[in-house]
Length: 445
Picture 1 (tube, rainbow, N blue to C red):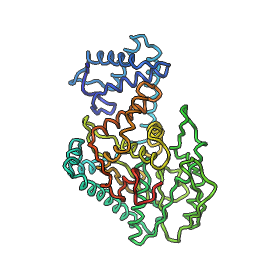
Picture 2 (picture 1 turned 90 degrees about the vertical axis):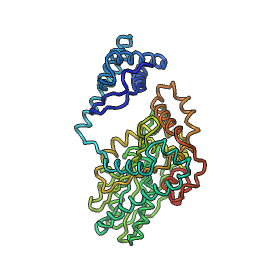
Picture 3 (picture 1 turned 30 degrees about the vertical axis):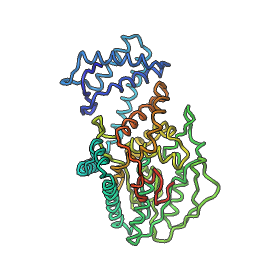
């Protein structure tokens, strides 16, 4: 296959590996927007784009993203696909406007220090590449890695506990926030135990119980609900109850049944003792509208993220979001009667909400904890790998499922590169991973 260059220049000036599949996906999406679903034709047009690029660019002079898109437009028009070309141009224009709005509205927050610490730890423990990690498994060193990784995570929690203790006289709420499947439940339990050991009385309160009934959320064409936004929760009631708790009063907390997707009629009386701290576990804990009724000085905000630094067999780092997707696929199947297929197809809602409501608010956190576990992939593989070939076959030629296909392909390749580990008894019940694969020493919801 002809390739014009091994790299491409991104809009920020960074040089990235050239990915032919992105061209194919872009053309296929544009064609699908005007009713075209011919995968073979899409591949042929991609070949024409590659040939055109190869005539102009090379490794010494790679194209920019904009130049690649210019070539795509020319090829589509020359080949007589005017409608597809127009759809591509419109999409490109809308994306440019979106990037402009984002630049004007916010500065991207990247936890560089945490990223560097994660990489340094992975290198020193010989698990920074798939090749090294697999060698570690084959040589019987996985149990020691599990111990070391769990200890690293717990030491970060000890740092968070120390920061909380410094403000113990003014705090009323501790908020454990972070994107989906970042490990908020286990972190909440462990952090509470650390603070209790220091003489602070801590009471967990899950805001998951404040979701509206699932049927009240909008559905897409496939019948899937978008319940990932802050507005999926009864924000008015949340703020009313938090204000009451901040004043020292008790509340009648709702109960949400995730299996039925409904709030039940019964409530739980939540009456914290005077002087106790309330520990909130919630996806959107950094979102301002969620806790607006509580003064900032009464809140300690802890942010979680799975910052993995594992380089894949293809030479790229495994995506943090893919690790959380794998966790959620297992957890939803275990605890929420939600199949792995539904979870991966729903993930675009998760990512859209994260990028809009969670990632931009990271800078609001008082402390950050990296919940990635260097050993988790082979255990997640046990639960998921057998499902993925079916998804790939089913979605390969379905334009409406292209997003799901791309994600499934990527996580299949990642898990396929990892050595099998048959015995999950190596994972202790106190491990954060048990929140997802089952067998946790803590109550999981």
